[in-house]
Image (tube, rainbow, N blue to C red; front, side):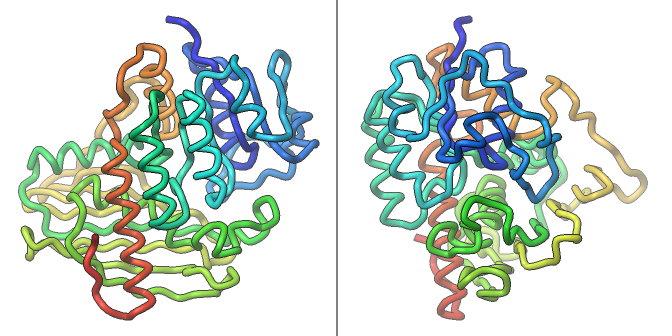
Length: 349
């Protein structure tokens, strides 16, 4: 298998995470880096901060044999790059993704895929006209526990779903990123788009796009005017007795642990993922599924491994997502924002 040559744009928390993963993928070769910060281009990531932990950022990255660019457009123009991996603030995703696709590159773009519905329509045109493959970092789709639970629910293994609750609660990310862009609603979309979107996407992946949403949220708790905490009820006309809810936010103090959890109550068992791990609870026993197969510990590892293998084999990457499924999740979270603004239940279009 020939190496897939990666050009990585952005060395924040997700960019440095991707950098570390690519070092251990045998089919991937990182050949180019772009970042506007000269310290990061020199390998200094000591100021990079994440909300769910990470590696030792005191160690300087080794860019030996890797081209470094200040301007991402120069990286995109590099003929030695097969895949452009975009890990920059959300408001810049469309610009670089569209340019890379038009240049004939394969593109892996971090979430959220873009900032609003208008940008989604523009990106959709570029994706559907492109020769290269396109995937989005909706990592929960490939996260081991979520993937296992989704397959069980889809197969009806434990009977009908009665209730499902998804939670993604982060300590404050105020001050964590370049120019504090998370705290500017125009750039990030607030916690509802940058953070809660993962659970919106999980809901859509498990149960399909909902017919309506009812959301309540609070603005400007830590950001300028973004929705910093939200709770949503997702309604399905075909399953009126099923209650699906999700809660997300980043308004808590920085000392609060990060939480990504779910509880899915079915007729025959309850599937639960929390700080205690992932377990399946029955009336008379508790099971702990073995999810270690493949040696890839997180959804980040699995999504990047899968995408680069698809590029290497010229195979359409559709195991975890299609653009249409990503668009469904994006339109759903946009409807949640509308519901918060109007105070009314909103149809998902």
